[in-house]
Length: 90
Image (cartoon, rainbow, N blue to C red; front, side, top):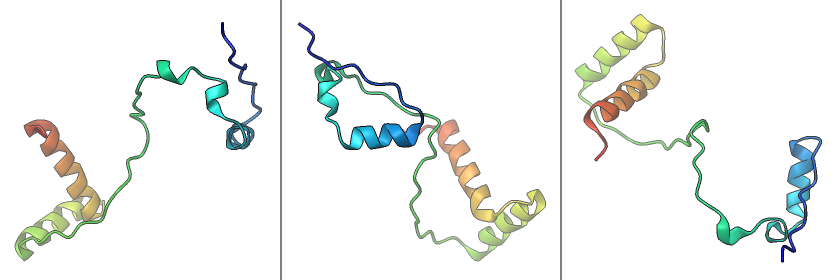
């Protein structure tokens, strides 16, 4: 027997957030049947790191970034991402 409540239609995200802040989702969904999902289009969180580079390498990166009119740290992230894709993270 299905004793689950029906999820109402919401006018906007604010209304939905307010609803879920005050309601128990287990009354609306069979949580034992939940499956993991991914959200590939979400902006990933970032973490600051300290990275020591030879001065000449850093200057070369800055020159390349300047040629492309992008911040050098953004260019470094693009290059690192491509390298991970190419060489694999495993």
